[in-house]
Image (tube, rainbow, N blue to C red; front, top):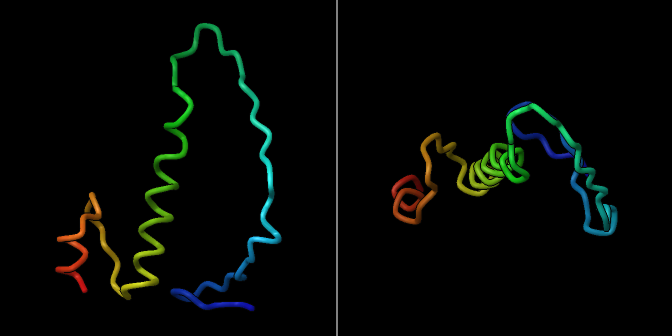
Length: 75
């Protein structure tokens, strides 16, 4: 089933079609700066939470953190 959000169409997914495993590869980068392993997920995770809150509340929040007090003030 397709859902329209802000002019974009996206397909709803059920848990049955989600992958059950991910392959992770650690790449050696001698001489390059250390980037860590979790930093790459921080931006997309915050965006996904923000999009979920926007879908639930109908109002987009642009400031972090998404605290209870701030979300209640928005709704």
